[in-house]
Image (cartoon, rainbow, N blue to C red; front, side, top):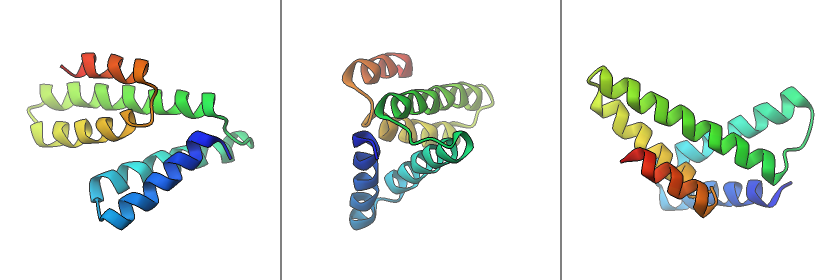
Length: 104
């Protein structure tokens, strides 16, 4: 198991202990996506692949936020922003800063 995947698994356990529903839900989404890739491609994901998946998930959130704001659904855009913040905690600083610039 990759180091980053272990870190995400530990984050899930921490979110369970803290009863942080938003963080727990997002971390579970991340783990589900990692598992889907592992099953579909029949490989264990390494850290580079995990980062690529996280970056893709962040991009999906950015696109969703833009669509929700266009449609006037600020409540759903806020949920997507919260998920982006959780995903950004697992990305390296350079990628996270890039995402923060796009968020503003």
